[in-house]
Image (tube, rainbow, N blue to C red; front, side, top):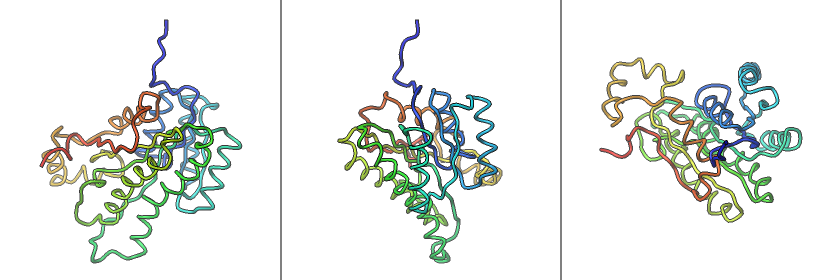
Length: 258
């Protein structure tokens, strides 16, 4: 006899922003593996469609949709979320994953590049989160998971805008909780450490940086996208019904030691 589990996401619909590749791709895969229907998102329609086809082959056409819209543009976000809710069905889960990096010392950082990082990594979570919450709040239920970083709590040279954005995302998670938790929403964040993906491959291949990561991390290794899937599944499920406003660090212990 099958025993119901609070981790089961069957019948739920999840939107994962920035999910045509990298960490977002893996998180969408994890939610679909737990039973959810997923709405993939990206800016590049061609790459997004390729990802949708891969997901459809694994999980079935009926459980996979894809939509392209600009997470930094208020009108584009409003149209995108309205399309999902009106054409595809109600969203139960939102994962705010879209983000970019820009490595320049603060003294040399152009204001337009600062604004671009803040807009993509922080403002987008506000815009998409607000638009989704407008639908979730009257229903009295919903899960929002914001994807932060160890830079939500730490800093390194040359990534000042990213650090500011991820620090802001931690407190945005708290602000969303302060305003929306009483209506039945759970809003939390995960803060990945250094994760081995195609976007960090150059850092993995740098012997000096790779050695520093392995020595600085108590687990003595880079994280993998698989390390993130379980925590996000948990936060998206009924198993985390009384968890709210938290940032969970998935970093191999990096932020726990000096």
